[in-house]
Length: 148
Image (cartoon, rainbow, N blue to C red):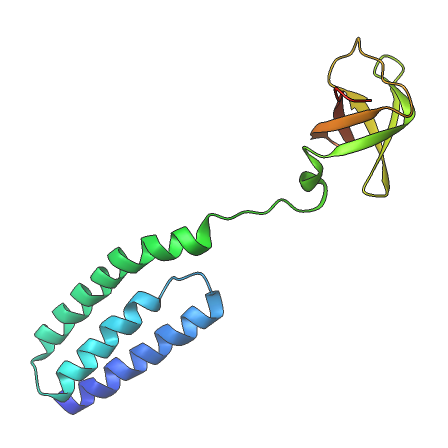
């Protein structure tokens, strides 16, 4: 029965590796280590109950130790893409921005965008430099910079 358990643990190890490769989200890598330890224990003739306990303990230990490290290095770095990456950048006003008239256009990174001012009472003239504060639908929300 113990030799049979070596095969069982190795099959579970292989399933865990395949699942990890399929998800790339660090969801089953912990079980690989537990299966490996349990397979070694099965090979040397340790009872099945001890193998299962060792599998659980090793899997939980690896999860507790490696997951926080992996999460710190891989999990929390989000990079703004597309329009969201424009917030904070400077743009050149190409068409007067007047919220009351609903007009305004800027050019940023070679692309033209509709724009509006963050303050309804502020009119920004073509040729001025603005900073992009937010995105509202398909319009950039901008403010005058100190140096125009």
